[in-house]
Amino acid sequence: MALEKEINRSTAKSSKPKSAAREWLDSIVFAVVAATLIRWLFFEAFTIPTPSMENSLLVGDFLFVSKLHYGTRTPKTPLQVPLTHQTIWGTSIPSYLDWIQLPQYRLPGFSDVKRGDVVVFNYPPELQHPVDLRTNYIKRCVGLPGDQLEVRDMQVFANGQALENPVRMENEYFVSTTTAVNEEKVFRENGVSEFSGYTETYNDTIPSNDESGYLVYTTEAIAARLKEYDFVKDVRTVKATKEISEPSLYPNSPLFRWNRDNYGPVTIPAEGKTVQLTPENVAMYGEVIKRYENNENVVIEGNKVTIDGKAVEQYTFKQDYYFMMGDNRHNSADSRYWGFVPKDHIVGKAVFVWMSIDPNPTSALNKIRWNRLFRIIE
Image (cartoon, rainbow, N blue to C red; front, top):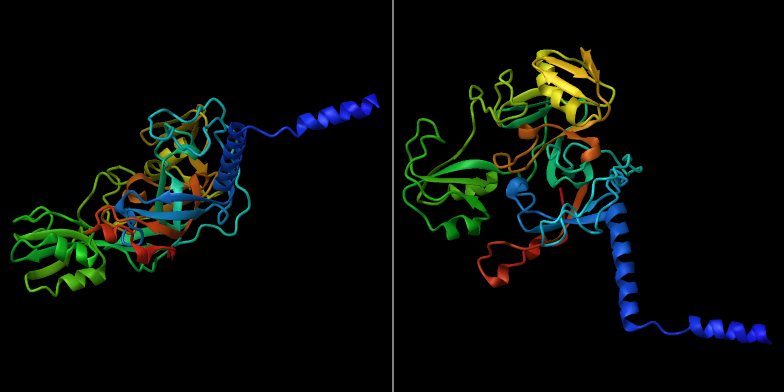
């Protein structure tokens, strides 16, 4: 009988209703845990902040990125505030501690990265953060591990074959006009989101020409449409000749006199691939060996590489790498400027746009780009 009373007393205690505050706390904890697991395992939402992928992806597009396609990465930095990246929301306070760094693995995925995939990855040169917390970039993969990649007169080639250009790829054009134009009407209504103000000389940009007009970043189809206006004298593609050298390009070496429109050829590192460390290869791959291959005490002095005090004359890569480019080919900081993307930096595949908000709408009614909602990313 006494035992029965004790059981009844215990049951009464356990059935005591939770307070409203406790109910809210339990709901919040459950939601945070569920959202964190979904964000890590399945997909994550991103927004497009820059025009580097226009006209395929626009500034203000919100998209879902699949972690399942290439395989989910295990966390490297476990001491982190949930649902944050580098800082706590709305502050500059770091959201993580790098006291513990775990080995990183990748779960099995649906597929490997393919040429033409739109990929989200961690920005490799951002060495001040752990790999999984470097800034997220989005570009199109144009080069796979082991590919020989080259840009000839603005056309990308892989292993000697011209790649199919993205349908909405943008180039830079000079629009020569007889007078200043209504920019809002002529450019924005035609879907041109980036253009310079009117100027009376473009000698530095268009060699051997002293004309008035605008620089615009747009698609080939829209450029042809602009040419139909009476006040437009000509629309010409802006491009660099092969003789011009851009010193800011990767690998920032005088051994390579390339520009953004004529780049390479360059061989993309592949796991298990061995290269001889010639002066050209040290310039091309030295920083890869030092930064991304988890080697200890790498020293590069001129054309010589030492690893943990031992001079090496050849090197075998430990992981695959990729070459990424933006669809807005003249307004994209991509692999042409900072190099290869290691496989352990790959976050996921961009799948579809679920919302799109125009940052510069012509009216409040046009704030949401309704025609872009639930658009599959090609």
